[in-house]
Amino acid sequence: MSEQMERIKTLIIGSGPAGYTAAIYAARADLKPVMYTGMEPGGQLTTTTEVDNFPGYPEGIDGPTMMMQLQQQAERFGTEVRIGMITAVDFSDEFGGIHKVTVDDSQVIEAETVIISTGASAKYLNIPSEQRLRGGGVSACAVCDGFFYKGQEVAIVGAGDTAAEEASYLANICKKVTMLVRKDYMRASKAMQHRVNSIDNIEIKYNTEVDEVLGDQVVEGLRMVNNETGEKEEIAITGLFIAIGHKPNTDIFKGQLDMDETGYIITQPKSTKTNKPGVFASGDAQDKIYRQAVTAAGTGCMAALDAERYLATVESKETVES
Ligand SMILES: Cc1cc2nc3c(=O)[nH]c(=O)nc-3n(C[C@H](O)[C@H](O)[C@H](O)COP(=O)(O)OP(=O)(O)OC[C@H]3O[C@@H](n4cnc5c(N)ncnc54)[C@H](O)[C@@H]3O)c2cc1C
Image (cartoon, rainbow, N blue to C red):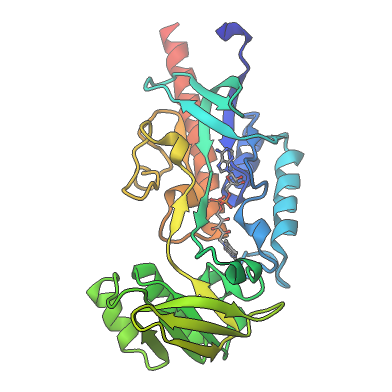
């Protein structure tokens, strides 16, 4: 049975900046990587029009083009890119052990090393006007898109540390930031609350939720509702930032890999090693702090180098023992 299974040296799960960078390095190291793209080929950046902060693009570049170029670069060195979802995994506990991975609930393949780069998904409010204006002024990434609203009035939804951090970031760039907090208190740490409270151009509205994002093609305003009184209020804004959390795409690894309480894969310090030998994690799936394309690419590079060193150690051990 197992003789008929396909055996891959380095399997890469996910086709965002982390996955493609891992693929470029792994292919150049002759690890003959095979990548499964998942349901979003190219990853999160395919949902944005303008990437202005990735080094090497002085004029900026649109997300889908950048990801197509990364794919071409990975394929140039021999990466095999396959359309498909990894739906189950069975990771070995043994050093040098073989990992079994199921593709699209049907085919099982074997891999000597696995690089996980399944990313994360931003949570949205999921109201129709917000969904319609995603990419037209509604964003889930202040660090990525805040610059486009320089000198303008924006709003941010959220009450945790990330929301507070992003509100402070936006306040540096924008004329005014209205912060919508659903409860009558913020979840953010006391230090972060103090920071947002001390910034003059941040106005915090408690017990307040989004009723509707206003605008036809782009965001022109926001109708808010006080969830205690039912009172509605409209403000003119050009950007709405949603900062209510991210969900790492790691459900299929639960029970096999060590994760934190929100599902981010835990890697060893200064490495991409997980708790399973030969399984490495890169990009947003293991990073809840930075969540940028360039940091994802950086850890993708690390994962490929870690996989290469691991395989070399396995091979030299086998040679000594034989
Ligand atoms: C709207 C928006 C704009 C952004 N703008 C910028 C920006 O301007 N600059 C910047 O630096 N960052 C930006 N970011 C953040 C950036 O996109 C992410 O940090 C980066 O894409 C993370 O890369 P990743 O490779 O870890 O994962 P992702 O890009 O999230 O890719 C994950 C990949 O894994 C695949 N996958 C998931 N599950 C499976 C599975 N079971 N089997 C197989 N494949 C699977 C998916 O299909 C996808 O291909 C933006 C994000 C968003 C949402």
